[in-house]
Amino acid sequence: MANYKRILLKLSGEALMGDQQFGIQPSMIDHFGDEIKELVDRDYEVAVVIGGGNIFRGLQAGNLGIDRVQGDYMGMLATVINGMALQGVLEKRGVNTRMMSAVNIEQVCEPYIKRRAVRHLEKGRVVILAAGTGNPFFTTDTAAALRAIEIGADALLKGTNVDGIYTADPRKDTNATKISNITYQEAIVKELQVMDQTAFTLCKENNLPIIVFSIREKGNILRILAGESIGTLVK
Image (cartoon, rainbow, N blue to C red; front, side):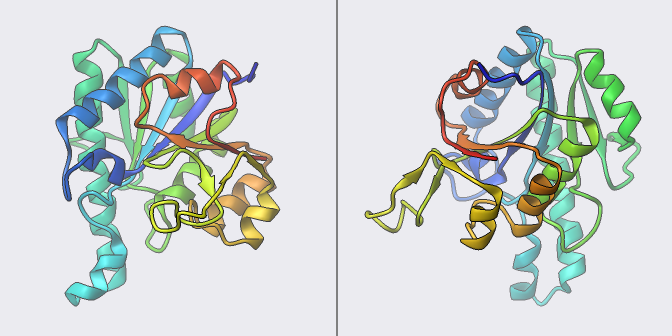
């Protein structure tokens, strides 16, 4: 059985779109809320980093004639919007939450302070960590790795639209095969696109296991925490 008590759950903004091309699909945000409530009901300590790709990516900025730094800050604000949506559905389910942002938006959420985040987790609150690292040129994957290490998480669980890491994009290559276990170094050398290199390196240096899995399938997170081999384990 996996010995994970405190986890950081990384959710992609794209997963929030569901079958849409943009924005938040109500059924998906409700699904996220149900899955996280199940964890809280079983006394797991849960922090969440959510991406913003369903609204805006900093990498899109160049196509719009916007400076990359400005674009990255726009992407950070997109994660705040997604975090607020997740907070809303969790509180509707009776889950106590705190949203903390790396960019100060006092009317909306608390500033991110490591000790305060840990205290919220100890009190059984779900901590939603928004605005990435607060710095341009860093992805939310890197933010997830950094925050997981800071708060002393036992594992980083990355929920995506795909059920693990493959040798190639399974949506484009029918010959792609799923990888059940891989080392950090192999993931870095092979330049696997499921997470960026900085995130992999941070996890490697701090021995933080990563599990990449499909967030779409109900109950996957609990099965992982029960020790089932779901998705891909990077260690």
